[in-house]
Image 1: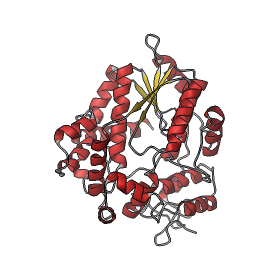
Image 2: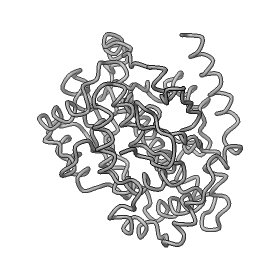
Image 3: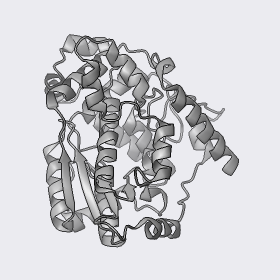
Image 4: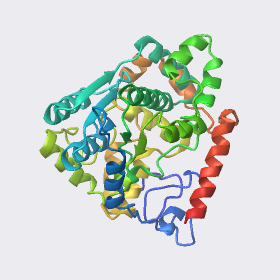
Length: 369
């Protein structure tokens, strides 16, 4: 059974023609599959050299690990502490929607490793107002959460003067992002200025660094204001999704959702709902992209991916959607109105500096190939 019966779907993966800039050949195979972009790690030796270079001999910690309780961030904590013997401080941004399972996983991992851990808990009422108004304007709350999470990571890294920040970003998540620049602060501020519920001071308080852009962040990195940002899973040959789960279950008594073979973002109770909304607005969402990457990596067959995707039942509202709507103080009528959001309608309001900086980075990457 095809994930999308009403539109063309790739013969090899699950992506459909609604995916941005996708092209199908005469055989019905998508451009992402035809590119055959096999993941090639940068090399573990390079990762070790980075750790040796930035390891902090003059303060308490070598690295900050943002810990969500999900699979990838927990695995990063395992690598940092158990494999590479780094002195770690961990932090968790409480977005108000953390699952009980994620909290349990965080507590178990912290207890097993003995690392210092902080829960960053912002003003919950402000948080709800931000999420509500972003959702009503764009159908999205994940961008607002990502922006706040990043701000708290930077704030914690500066507080403890850590020379490294280790992210759990995975090659498996590539190609799963929205075409809208949902993490752009200028876009974020423009959208929220339209509401009467929020003052400039409230928006700035939520952002922590209200004038942050990619250029300023780059300067901070170069001058040591914040530590080196490292994504270890891009340096090493990654275990499969199932193997990672087995490792952290053994090391930290990590737990997955019941009766779920491949979980994603179990840390947030809103994830099934946000995936549903993304699918309605864009015609694709995270899981269809991640399953497609797993097919290309040879972790699962297309038949297996279709079976998993069918079980996810993305086209239907999840059982807990009313809980999420209640948290956001949004009615079902308002939810349905938000589903009419037209993608990219706020792109002209993204930061000019970010736009230029992104082009420079793109050119640099092209030249280095």
